[in-house]
Amino acid sequence: MEAGGQVLLGRSLEELQDFAKAHGQPAYRGKQLYDGLMHGAHSVEDITNVPSSWRQELVRQGVKTGRSKLFKEVRALDGTRKFLLQLHDGYLVETVGIPLDDTDKQRLTVCVSSQVGCPMRCTFCATGKGGFARNLRPHEIVDQVLTVQEHFGTRVSNIVYMGQGEPCLNWRAVLASVEFINRDIGVGARHITISTVGVPNSIRMLAQALKERSLQITLAVSIHAPSQQIREKIVPSAKAYPFDALLDDCSTFNKLTGRRVTFEYTLLAGFNDSPAQAEELARTLTRHGLRGSHVNLIPWNAVDDAQFKRPSKAAGRAFRDALNRAGVPVSVRVTRGTEVAAACGQLRNEYQRTPLDALLRQALQ
Image (cartoon, rainbow, N blue to C red; front, side):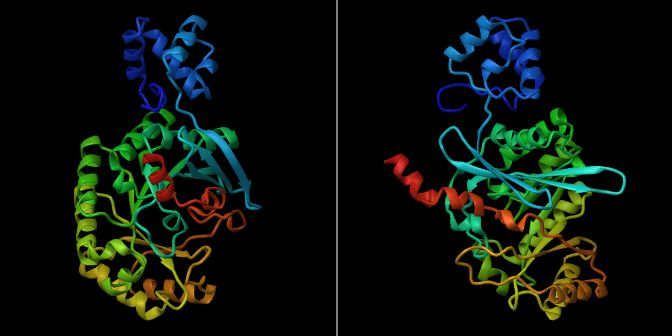
């Protein structure tokens, strides 16, 4: 539900057929609604394959498609495009389209957000600096994928839940959106990645839910440090969710789903990017039976008012080589879209300068 009525986007074909019948219409009207939504209808009035009389009735009842307004779009020279979407309550949320030409085909990855802002407040993250307002609903996540697909004019091939927010604090809506994206947009489960910094109990619950649904998605866990001591300095939640407990849950995820975990590691110059720290990370992963897991190194994208610096390419190579020598699969992410405020939250913060938690307090008064 949105303010003012029901939302159509995010419902399965069967659910829309039931919706039609509940409104005194034949079931095939639900198929017409579904087709209209999947062919880009942004408002109920746009679903022209449905009789005008019923469209008018749906509008009168306050039924919405659930599509957001495009507030701002910026483009990078490498083809990356960031979209700032305005939700029904005025909040802004980011999504990014990242095209990549392989030797035999073109891929289009969408980086989606799962919350308006983020409550985790990691010290190097632009989203955390903007505060937190609310969870996104399933249709608001699906809308991001449809927006990128429409503006690029090509089919989306990969989805990463690595935008604003902590997906495991909104995992039911995230899972509902994953199921829709997989079933209705046609993105293979193995091409969908959920990224988390770690929320107690959530990884085990997510693993069980994925097993029950037979969804073989990838879990990416943002660790950003080789030890509990260092992690606590940049990830506030690490005090409540110790590093060893997090890695134990990652091991359980692997056993329950049969899917290896990817570890995201943001390199911060002079803080966590030394070869000795890479060796410590390898020992820690080995101790938890996770040495075969893939480590994705991410050179930090600078954000305003941050205390960190982007590491040199040489430092990144040295860290990578140390992990390689220890037998840990590793890669270095190619940074995309740096000239368009590509770090999560940068563009949103530029246009919604009042901290989100302050806006939320104002709305509740």
